Length: 314
Ligand SMILES: [Cu+2]
Image 1 (cartoon, rainbow, N blue to C red):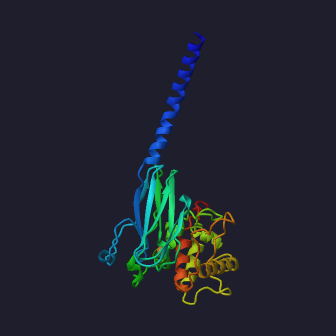
Image 2: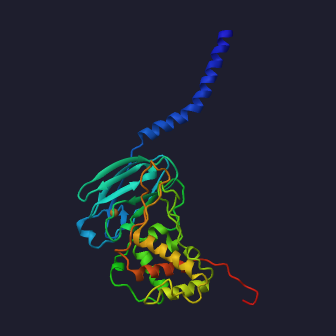
Image 3: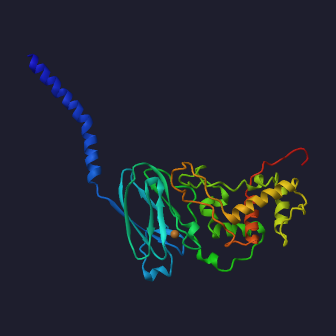
């Protein structure tokens, strides 16, 4: 009797353990045996994109490739085939442990990774590969995570031809901000928020509060400052712009912003022993003239939201 009771207890326990463990075992087996999904990404310097479209000699000249939009299931294994359509690129997707992988034209590289967590993961080109380099960023989405609101703008080839006529300095600045690729790191309208792996501040700084940084306290001060920026001779320390209340401070801050744009600024690492953050502020002085930089500053200060002062007869 006793032995029988023991036996049935053991059997019941085995059944319980089995029913709990079996699905996990099965999942594990399934994941281990699931075939890898192959994704081919080609870097295209002339439009600053990573594309899944096949790139051949014939269609390269038309250059109508779509930027890749990759969505993976959580747990999916990927065989990533990487190519360059033109010049040397370097593929880097740090959050999923891929790269940097140097991509020499004519060669194919292959890496494997597993999408083991849900989220949006950015990938970058970290080799300065031409005029459209600063557009060359993409993302892939794992699981149910929502795509980011603003994808990096593709580099429009027409921007390299002569620019259109502008109705204001800020409008001109917007054009340069978007066509030179500032937008792909600093976000549409300078809203920032693009993740930069191992960067002390986490994401690329927003620039839509530049007016405050320049000590411009209201819309009318922004207008007065912009007016002065648009003068042929530019800004001068001893020539305060009428209507800007703290000219000495505004001018000093403007000089510091100008230095950062012209000379660049290396990103501070979050973990000093970790890798270089993939995104950095390059020196623009060879690529943008002072007039263009001033127009970009005019655009960015126009993006600041001020609290409206109403009442008091104002
Ligand atoms: Cu590149």
